[in-house]
Image (cartoon, rainbow, N blue to C red):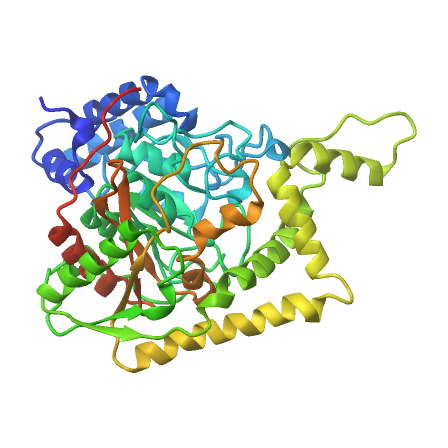
Length: 493
């Protein structure tokens, strides 16, 4: 039998239905791969017993002819998703030992589709980070390596990206608040899609910035992303921002035909100091789409330069509000108090011990921009900029543009620790190409499209019209086929 962990979701689905192997055998292969890959620090809570039970149930469904697309497919779940009876800590000390009594809507839908949970995946604490170095569990290591340097897998969904790239699961859930699916996907040579805001329920997903957070799949290729996304989508009455829209068959949308489609190249994404490798990759991607019959045109998104500062006002502001609930009273960590300490001391000590440095930084920034005297100067101004950024996209799409092509990241993966002592703004610049998509609530996807001079993967981003994930996935599918990216990290772990 070939190495089952190398298969895509689509391949495994078809082979499971053809009875070439069982879900139990497939799950066992991944459990073994995970145990052998502790050096990557991707999985933080392994759940082999749950996986075995779910695989057994999947085999029964397959035998009975009731096999949804994800039936028997082993997945990893980002630690931001609440999973009933399983540690769900958002990689934070303040949620130490928290085991929810409920299942997030998305994981519940995946399990209803027969998916198998291999365990919970590492991430940046409360999804705040671009390198997976803020986790209470320690750094995730990118399976791609150069000169024995440990590289970042990106963040915040770094554990998800590393696990998929290293064949430790067939797909993984991720969340994207400012690029946390697309940036790590680009750094690890996999595919990641952030759907339109409201397409996937946020219920049971630990909140960072509620108007920006959106869940999505991270997979080996575009077809797998389409399969997994369909299972994750759908209206949820428990989430007031969940859209009451029918979920299309995203896999059926992968026709490979984009003749006559108009693809925009925003001039504002040509940044000063952009590496020539990134510029060449972008130009090559445009030529691939042009060769496939698309009309590639230059466009303008004039307020792009304000996106990063606006994002780093809005996201911390919402985070400071969302994280106020972690006070040591109801669940999670509570600090040991000294004699005479009151409730204020309990709050202060608990939050100082429970939150890491990056979370503390963003909470303090957010509290500042929401405070009296600064609310209008910072927060309301950022909201107005956000509206202008959304209008830029609306205006471009109104001209008939079907999708927008940009780089996914300003560089390939960098070394772990390289930015820890730097100005935090340098780390925030990793999100320069991705935050606009979240501010505008649009769907965006990262597709691996080439290697840099060091042999590290580089990704291209496609941005689509709202609610047009099917069309976006099809364009990404064409780009994927033309790029022919098949490189995998050499196994060293």
